[in-house]
Length: 607
Picture 1 (cartoon, rainbow, N blue to C red):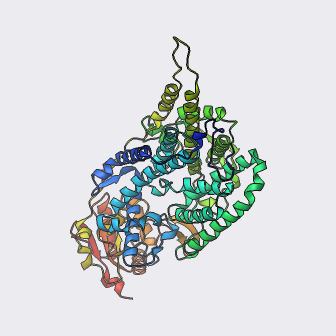
Picture 2 (cartoon, helix red, strand yellow; picture 1 turned 120 degrees about the vertical axis):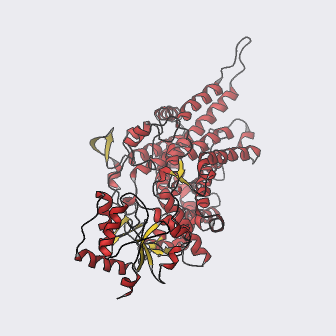
Picture 3 (tube, rainbow, N blue to C red; picture 1 turned 90 degrees about the horizontal axis):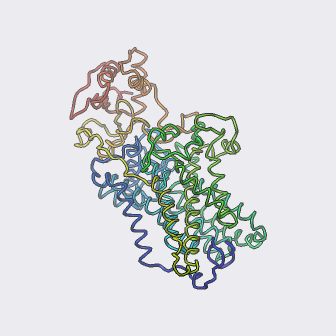
């Protein structure tokens, strides 16, 4: 039957012979069991983090767990004090940080404020990651089971693939915005229902609200989803052009309502993001398309994991955006060929293939060999919004598509097995279901995720944890860590959180403009000369020669930052850092409560 018949549920299956199969699937304990299994599995994956919320750190997150916990803590503080959650000056003082232009996930950080205030941002971090994994699987299961297939087991397989596939698990180390896909299935559903002509006004309202909420969960996943859905819709309409006329009026009504409502809800936040303080125009990453080998290899955190091979064709452990493994690729090709005559499955497959192709980037790279063959991404790479995308992430649109194809294929097998005629006397029935589920298990087991790696994070120095900093920071003054915080130096964010966000800090780790006259985005603050000088120690491991010009510049920078105290923790090359700062300030540091400090209030107060 048609996917877009008015008033009917979305069906990827032929018209069933038995009318009873057409009845909507009712809620049951089976639903609760499947969703509960997703949640239990998600808890197991983050078991190391849950076991030690006080000191556990997702090791492959690099600097990002500190950043996300800082986002959650700052948002909770803004809500508690009725401040604008779209901005803060706790980092990058005095310029501040545009929170809306960062991945602060206000859609979860604001509702979870009571958790953050009561139990700390690490608890919120664990809840968001765990809940997002389980929620994404559950959401796709719900939509698949109610609107795509007849059997819960089919939908359960599709939901598991959509929620726990290698790209999602890779991002679960550090990027909850790319794990929280639980709104996207319902966006797809509302779009289809509007096209069907089913209560376009009500569904348009829901679409507008859900779209606005997704913006506060993650804008990049929304853009990737929209691209994949547009390809699916075009492919479907090309197969069923006769249905286009009936779709126009409800699409205009529902789409217009959704667009208008979303604009009302998002007008001010989006203005703040793109035009407010510390906004930026684009965040360019260079050419970061997928190597074709990334699709057939196994992800680091999978049962058949190949850490060395995965690292060879990915940016880092959190950007393994394909890695479906060759057995699954083979099965998906077989399923696509098998289901090619079904318009829904064919449209899903076309969307999957084109999004995978787009993810290869500007030029096709095969096992590190740049073929020079241009890809379709070349047409989009420089367009607004698209220029900030990591094109390798476009492969994530393949995740729900693969889940949908496996759900449909499983449904076909289960239905066909039930309709097989009884075998003759002395003959046994062909175990069709057993063969299929055995094949699916054999294909999915190698890419099944393993528990995420957790290690103990460094303790916060007593200078911050015990409040000693209060005796050194003047009203309106800041703490200047040595070296200054950045994308590779995020521990100062954790110290600030453990200090109750009581002080402000120079520079930091966030996304902001490259400078006062350069609106291009960058990770971290536009560095002052003294910050860059301290980074030279990190790179060389030796103290930097200091002259009068360096001292004058340091004074200007410290005054710009409103610095009260410089702080250095015991660390690699700390002797070189200490010697350099001693020379810059012409005064020795003092060791106080586990850190070296330089009180600069006397020199920064003098204007």
